[in-house]
Length: 373
Image 1 (cartoon, rainbow, N blue to C red):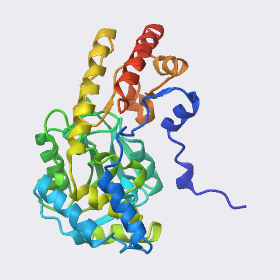
Image 2: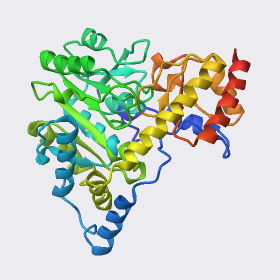
Image 3: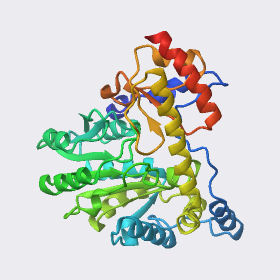
């Protein structure tokens, strides 16, 4: 009898999904990482034009259209000051596939991958699907990734480490000196740094830096996506880039798993990258305003929460039973342990919802906090 692969038996449905299924249909959802802004009109129009003209009818190149990859290279040249060859970019089915191909191309069975704890749920699962072993690395008290902790965790079996700034689930932004350290560690220890930068534009305090800006070797691969940058989650268009040698190996995975990213989505993302970026500033200002509403009310309630510096997540410290009390009252929040053992005693809050609903949810959280104490 055919059974199941050991790799797939090592993973399970995300704890985030379990929370959603436990909530009622009319619940206020503070668990979903979905910007509540529409995709820019010029991006939508570009996809429609590509469909109506027939340009989207056929496969594109495996790596994506030349014009999209040029737009991605121009974006990173302008934002990070790096000279990126469009030939070293692969357009993927969202940042999720970009993470998948990066790990599949570099991790063997039994290899270790260092991941932030708490950290995005895919890091653990995708490492296990490669046959590798995820090694959780605890965060600092302010929920930033500690380069020293990463360096201390490196062994002869370490193939890669993952960094994420701005961070999901934490909202933390790595300081320049930490990002320089990530690059140094990758260089000196000859391990791959996978830098997840999908929230790059949503920074309230400080600035975004990428390890690839400072690396002296090719030991950095960058994952990014139009999903959160331009509120295009449903379009499933991301990208991954690195050296030519690394990209060619990642392409081997991508071409068999995906062939190419969706053609209409590629034209939409190119238009978003080349077009008016006012929506980016509008989204960032709105998320910062909502963050401040959240933190002010948390302070009134007595909930301790490290200040998120980016993305649209907060990870307050909460008493046992708080998440269940919120769910019972019709507000979806995610238990911190869904993101790793280091998330125990926390909850993840997504404040990518309108301000009226956010204020209503905060009233509920005040009652839930009182009940759980």
